[in-house]
Length: 108
Image (cartoon, rainbow, N blue to C red; front, side, top):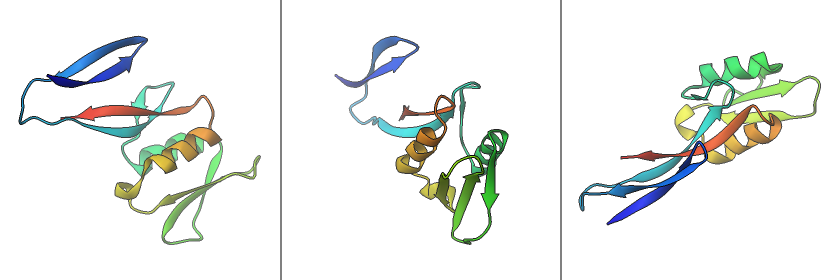
């Protein structure tokens, strides 16, 4: 038997792959901590960022860019949400400490 160890709510457990033909894949998701909501689209993300004081820039047609006037930080994201990768997620987490986190999820 094979599986993946998951850590959730302070408890670690093994999720086993019982089928030889079944397959598990791990992927990263961006989560809004206070609501425990997975960010599934740019419209959801934009609302969360706006509530934190981030403003959208419309200068580059190939990117979504956000700036917070009280900082020098700029968040640049690919226009297509399908190209939203873990490096973009971690950039958001670093610039919004204790608001977002990146988590691994198991996709069957």
